[in-house]
Image (cartoon, rainbow, N blue to C red):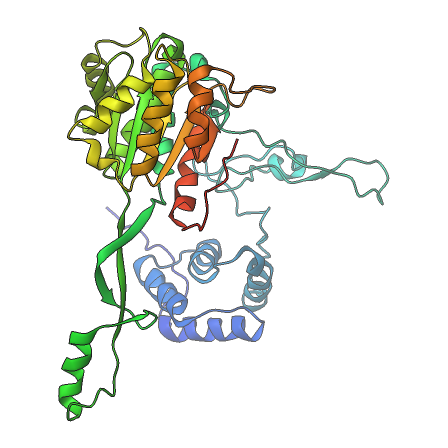
Length: 412
């Protein structure tokens, strides 16, 4: 049986390192910024996959040496100059080497002309079609750009909660957890060395002075070590909040899984949901939380539950923390009870945020007795009818770490 012919390899017998250095030198003279790391990547790529054709060599060099889209034109010009003894190869962004028989490797691009697809050419990635001039006049500057549509998940962020099913709510809850990249901090009692610190670290300074005859030549400074600020969230799960309950539970789970937050649900009684919502499975966590709240979709007693939280052994978690109350403000307790409860809460909490699903409605005013009584004690009143509103409320947490000399103005 005749032996198979060896596959032809370009640059056979050529020092790969010398070739890479020479080619990179040509690129640098042409104005392309290529460093030592990119040169080493090219040498390693040529050793791992020896090029069998000019096309393979082009893409190997391009992937390893080009880091910016604006450098493609320079790279294509230098590569064509070095290998101009072979048939010309389309090296631009919109033209690529011939496509193989496997249709999964290259993707045909619509709208690029019949000549681009007649020969079986395409792009080695799925991309948008190129802009097309709209005017018949060659001097017309009108450009018809491809229509950009949002993803299915981005479109759901503006949808009301009552229009979302359970899988969509879980997917948006995962997006909400990813948005918790900034968490409020407070000044801790511990300190760490920092050249920009205002306080002198006496022990470290004296220890350095032992090396210089007890002369404090080197002064070590330190600054307070920040610690995460506690966040406490109370979610209304009464009948008037039935449409928002599932979405608010996703927000509560985001707080419990990402940071050390305490979350509670209330209707006529207060229920702590911190432990159930820390379950690794999102669906199991929501099911356990729903089973723990046995008074949901009933009446509402906001003032009574706030007082119960402050009187319980969890009341110390409110001290110096950010309290988030998610409710529409409908309360069966008298407004006087709400005023008394919010007065105590305001004395303990660092900031108080109120999320109201009806606050974003045009022309809405807090005329409900309980909502009107609680409004003077809230730092921010935010709308919370969509996941976009909840994401903006989460992003507001990073602004709550900035100290203020006076009361923070209430936002609506």
